[in-house]
Image (cartoon, rainbow, N blue to C red; front, side, top):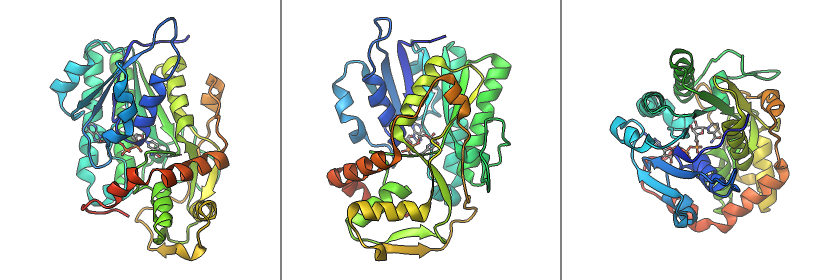
Length: 334
Ligand SMILES: NC(=O)c1ccc[n+]([C@@H]2O[C@H](COP(=O)([O-])OP(=O)(O)OC[C@H]3O[C@@H](n4cnc5c(N)ncnc54)[C@H](O)[C@@H]3O)[C@@H](O)[C@H]2O)c1
């Protein structure tokens, strides 16, 4: 069955994945003569940036609201007339969660509960909770499937796992049509330059050191952000209520190999690499079994090497976008 929606409440749409998703969904062709409108509710924390969606502001189907997902009155007001909610809003940086876990619990757990509750009251037709592979913890060999044990290792991952469990409970207890997506590491344009990929690209462009944790042998699975956007839209329209869908690419890479690729694309020296003290509780390897979403009908479109080159080029050509963020006077987590 294919579902279509007339008005979607998207939270955290001014961040990295959310802004790519808002742009993506506004560009989708009409279905049954209908193209959905979007409300983007975002608190504009350090990682939320209205610049990410300047182009969308001209679209009459797009509305931005600055606000907090923990604000129940505001959420209840905005959700009226919406038939779907997609919750991207989160505190998302593991290193920050190690130093300041409180904010992670507030937004990622309590904020999600507020959204779920308002969605229940307003009889939302579909609620997509955007989660992460990090809820499964680390795996030496093999892959995690959707039935694997949830065993988060950082306060960030624990807060996301708690939100997943709450979402599940709203499906079981109240019959709220919830679907959870758990994707691997995303990369692409508009990612805040504290995360490894934009951090390393922008540092290399400045000829600054690239701080690689420990021996650089930690493995991550990389998915291009537009592949994830397509997968989320696919699940929104075709997914089954109450289910979890892993969104992986199968493209595993050691952090050091990723670093070398970035340096090679930019023609920079390997001497820029600096091995630094490991992050506490650093997960060794993430890897997802993505057969369930493939069976549903989604297929990855982008080749890793091409998407990586396009991403590096985007940061090279959009210095104005990240320079200001990098030079902000605030506590740095890189
Ligand atoms: N980036 C990844 O590789 C990745 C992988 C898997 C899952 N995820 C999940 O995807 C989602 C988006 O991640 P991202 O990388 O785009 O993060 P991001 O940090 O770039 O964006 C988060 C957005 O949420 C907003 N926000 C934070 N607290 C809020 C609040 N209380 N109310 C309203 N808005 C608030 C921020 O202003 C920001 O715009 C998160 O839920 C994250 O856990 C990310």
